[in-house]
Length: 470
Ligand code: GUN
Ligand code: ZN
Image: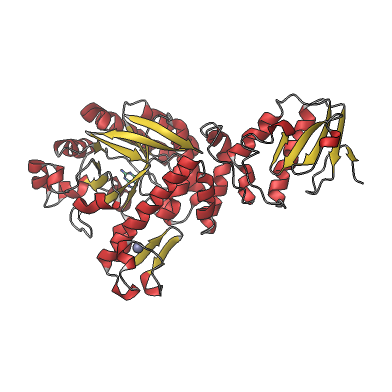
């Protein structure tokens, strides 16, 4: 049902079979509100949408209910592709109560012919206590099991657990054991609204840890283009966006750097069809919604291209620089680097473009420096800057080149990732620390007879004698 084609970090490009259709992931489902439309669902494919989502609870309670039951979901949401339906859990989390059981809303979704059917999960707010989160999980798990009984692998399994990583992981594992074919990380909208990106990263990674890598994973409500790159880097495959329409209503203009208020803008920086033929004053709600969709899908294509190139981390790093909280989330990501590394391809099409700071904590660096301890070198080693001429020492020493954050035996100068990676001349302190650790570990774990170093410009400390300063 889901096939992974390309990988970078924990992100992937895949193909997901939904009903009779196949969609390429990562992708974004525009949220279609059956009652208020700014963009007709039939037009959404022109923007790049391959799948859309609508709210079954709104249909179930509203005037369109009978039409949906008689003519099917597509008679009320005219989208020429797969349609997912949500259950009303979001209403539950906002209003505290809904007038429908999970079984009823699942049967309704089935009856209208939804391709992905969501039970009424119980979203536990971030920061809730353990007991609350555990009790909610039990209800959600039973409802997932019931949905699988009713609709098989069309059942969507929401993963809850609030901000307790172990509960998230357990919820994911329990959900995966039900036979559901599709998984959603739930109750993360409040975290995104409050810019609590470190907590978001912990919640998503914990949920992912409990799911098999073969599972398609949807991040509920993660529709802002500024955070797509980060969301994909955690292994998010599908997203939904109501933001394009909700933000348009409030005069908010989406960009990959964040949201702007139209009334504060003097220029439209975008080249989409809406922006390129208008001035700021001429942007109405519909044009704004269309612009918002264009930038959303533009960033999605950009993210996919970066995955193909093995350069997703470079893109996340750029996006993270547009907001301190996003950067905090990206830094938190590296606390999960072992999990990321196990998913990140060992060889990529291109090397690391070194931009300082957290770059030195990337999985390529961690992997390389860890493997360093396994190479056979010595018993006499010479540490030298990567661009130094060491030919006169090579009879006496095995040479270890240092190109912060990498250290490597000189034979590996041309190999991935050291050879292809572009690093700046003067490393920052964080990078230097990572490099120092690699050097220390190599010396500690090997039993060298002699350690020497050559003209070290980086401020690294090598416990040995300096040679060759003329
Ligand atoms: N939409 C946004 N968050 C959620 C969630 O946690 N569950 C469901 N079903 N829908 C959502
Ligand atoms: Zn535009």
